[in-house]
Length: 339
Ligand SMILES: [Zn+2]
Ligand SMILES: [Zn+2]
Image (tube, rainbow, N blue to C red; front, side, top):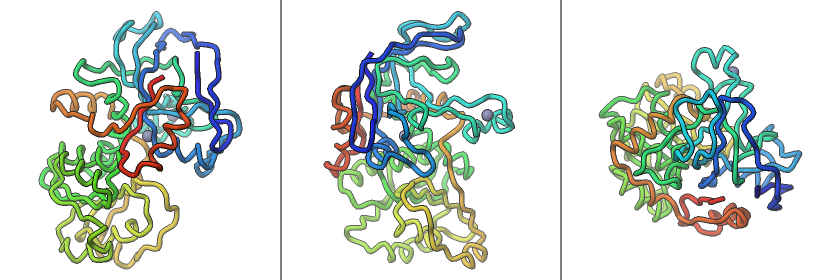
């Protein structure tokens, strides 16, 4: 089968490797059909590392994937050949305290696609444990099914802050995760505002029900706080941009919650006196936990159309172009590779 390997920064090689087969009878063999390009893939492609995770050996990128079941292990009951499925990319150890408490996203032994040394899904076939593979209904396309992964981040953020109907949420940075967090917050019954500068993204966010978007081409970031006037309960910071991250504590009202979702800036200067005085709660978020089934249900039952988020499709031979496309096209939202 074909697989796209990252050899070193900016260098992708398409190699022919052996097709995997089922060894554990709880696993399924999947023909990969769609894989979303994530910011983390682009990061590895450009830098060869994210923090402590360094690409030392050739690595297959890609973790937002869907496909069709080709074969199931003998013990698999709820999936069969031909099923269209979304694939949850992390396999936890199932034994540590975090796993046992149901917080498997925090499992220190998790094997997560496209995180060195674990290969991802820019390839034609994978073998995966059947309980991390979810059948999707006919009205969700395989391309859309890749968005269940970033949508899961949004749902997990809403769970984390225990978001309630009628609360006011502001989301800074309306890329794919920002827009899918917007969608999640709407599903939870929140009233959602946004901060963004790209016209295409502003338009998309409005189509997904944003109440109002602060366009930072027209308004200075520092002035946004004056307009929010003690209204915001929750901030989802999805941009990872320092200038926005440091402002978040001025957007929420007293007792407000802030979730740092976007990566990009590692260190911030935050006014701790204000955080204390206003009793603000600041959350980090790591991936998601127990969201896939619910995400599929939500998209299906609410007939949510995610196709508008997909900007362009590439075949597996063009993984390099797919990884470079978002930066060359500012109006790009999501790029999909179809192995
Ligand atoms: Zn992702
Ligand atoms: Zn574990």
